[in-house]
Image (cartoon, rainbow, N blue to C red; front, side, top):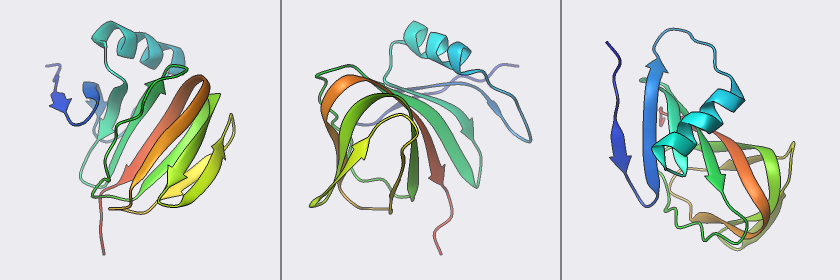
Length: 126
C-alpha cells in the first residue's frame, strides 16, 4: 500500500512512498515527482532517525522557512544562492555542504540561479 502524506509548514511539503529499511532514489525522478505535486519540498525518507528530501527554489524566490527542531545538512545539487544563518552568510553552489544546528534561524537569500538541494534532518537530539 502506497502511503502519501501532506505536511504544511512554512513551505508546501509533499511526501512520496518513503523508504523504511532501505531504498534507492533517482534525482530526476524526485524532481519530476516534486513538480507533479507542486511543492518546494519533497520528503522521500522519513523514519525515527532520519528525514530527507529535495528542496527547490526558483531564481528570485523568497525562502520562508523557519528554524527546525532537528539538525539539518544541505547538499547543494544545482543553482547559486547564499545561506544566511543568523548573522553569518555562506555561499551555496553545486557541491557545497552546509550545516545548520537545530532551532537556529536560517534562510536561502540572493537566489541567483534555480536551487536544488538535497536535505538531511537528524531526528535525534541528545
